[in-house]
Length: 385
Ligand code: CAA
Image 1 (spheres, rainbow, N blue to C red):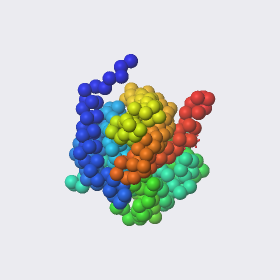
Image 2: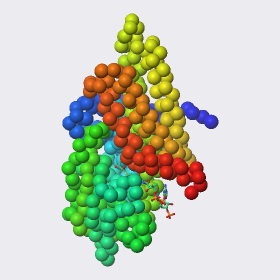
Image 3: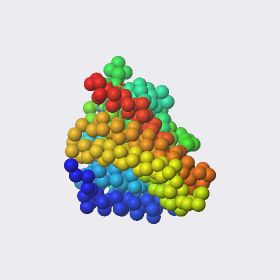
Image 4: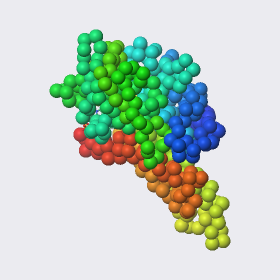
C-alpha cells in the first residue's frame, strides 16, 4: 500500500493552493455577503485547465486522474467553497457524463468548450438538472416531461436548486419520457440556456455557499433536437445515478476542504491567542479539540482519496463515494462548529472566516444526495440489496 502522492499530483495540489491564496482569498467575504458569483475565479480556473480536469485532452481536458481533481477541489474549498462547487459541478456532473455517454458529435460540440471552460473567450459552464420541487431525494419522481414529436423533443417542467443555474450555458436535464415505465422512462437531454422557452428563476438567497449561483430553471415547450438525447431513451435515471457517484466524490473533497480550512485557521488562532497566561493551544480544552479535528479530517481524507483512487482503477466506487461524502460532510460540519468555538467571539464575526465555513459546511450534508440518501446507498450494500 502506497499513500504517497505522485510528483504530478503534488504539483496540482500546489497549483490549487496558490490559486486559492492568490485569487480566491481576496474578496471571499464580500462575495459571500453580496452573493456575487466568482466569475473571475471561474475564468482563471478555466485558464488553469481545472474545469475539465479528468477529460481527455482530445476533448479539451487536462487528462488528469480523479485523485488530482480531489486534491484541487480540497485546496480551493479550504478558502472558497463557492468556487469549489462551481468547479465540481462542471467537472463531475457535467463533463464526466458527457464524456462517458455522449456521442462523438455531442463531445465535439459541448464537451470540448465545457472542459475548456470557455467559448469565444467567454466563460462556458454546465449545470446538472435533476432536482425538482417535488423530486429531491426521491429522484425517480420526475415531473418534468419530454415528448417525442418525431423530428424533435418537447420539454416542459421546472427544476430546483440548480448550481451554476444562471452562469451555465448548457444544461443536462433529466425528464420523464414514458411515465408508464417509471424510472426506466427517464431521459437525459442537452439543453442550451438561450433556447426559446428556457427561463432562469431568481437567485436563491442561501445560508451558505452564497457566492455560488443557485436558481430554479423552467422549461415551457422547449424544442430539443433529437441528437441532444444522451445515450438510449430510458437511460436517464441510470445516467443521473452514475454521474452522481462521481459527483459525490467531488462534494466529499469540497467538505474535506472546508474542514481543513476551518482547522488550519483554528490552529493558527490557538497558537496566537492568549488566555489565563498562555496561548490557548496549550490549554487541554482547546488542544483536545484540535487533536479531534485533525483525526477526523485525516479519516475523511482517507475515505475521499480511496473513493477517487477506486474510480481511477475503474472499480465499483458507488459505496465508497457515499461513505466519503457522508463522513466528510459530517466532519466539515463538526470541525467548522468547533472552529467557531475555538475562536470564541471572534469566530462569530465574518472577518475570521470560520462562521462562513460553518454555514458553507451545511450544504455538503444536503446536496448531491443528503446524508440520509448516502446511508441508504451504504445500507443497501451492507445488507446486500
Ligand atoms: N449506478 C447505476 N444505477 C443505479 C445506481 C448507481 N449508483 N443507483 C441506483 N441505480 C439503478 C438501480 O439499479 C435501479 O435500476 P433497475 O430498476 O434497472 O434495477 C434504479 O437505478 C432505481 O434504483 P433504486 O431502486 O435504488 O431507486 P430508489 O428510488 O430506491 O432510490 C436513491 C435511489 C439512491 C435514493 C436515488 O434516488 C438517489 O440517489 N436520490 C438522491 C438524488 C440526489 O442525489 N440528488 C441530488 C441532486 S443533484 C445536485 O445536488 C446538483 C447540484 O447542483 C449540486
